[in-house]
Image 1 (cartoon, rainbow, N blue to C red):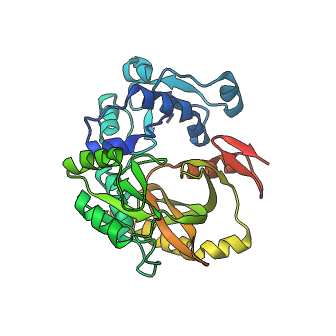
Image 2 (cartoon, one colour):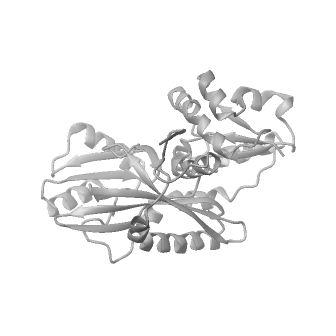
Length: 330
């Protein structure tokens, strides 16, 4: 059965706001720009859907050998109707489940509510090991007054970050320093608290290194560990790429995080989630010591790190190579 891969990289916005949410034209263009990375999952008869008006370059089409189709065509054309097609989203969302039903496509995905639960940052917070350094433990917050008290208690002048429960690639967050809040920061906070959102505060960590732990969960709950790939992030936290292997020493350093990740993946499977599952883990410096934070964030969806693993497998990448948004670099 040929598959339609849908690059809804912004699907956390729907998780936060509900099925009525619609991406802006800017987000649609961004989704189209990054859509070719889904080629790592495609067979010859599959298609990657382009939601915006920014087709891939001829170089991209030639190098990754993937077939593309416009969103307008798959929504309207009789050629893309019926059970001969299966819809595969980046992130499982109720709106795409409804679209699949309206077009009679195959839909073999977990319950969107299970997906929402495991992508919720509160789920990650609840599973932070109690043995972590107190400097790294995040705090749910429900008001500006609560945040102000928290900042006064930790009046050390260091940076901090407030995150929404759903977000991606460094978006939906507020970075600050010290105890004072600027007008723009207050505006960001007031808007979200007026919507009765719970936000998450945590200290800005001096990160030494970071990995994406990649697992796959079957429909019957079996967990398969795929890889721990070092992440290449910008100083502000945005994902840039992945290194495609670990040294034996690095593997030993991340071993506790890999073991905990397997436990969390089994828990997710037991609750009814299946599919790609990844955890971002970090090592950070606190004064002269290096600590492990094994659950920075849980992602119950495809991730760029998982696609790096898939591209590395497809391209037979060896040790010492890296993947940067579709390119394998020696």
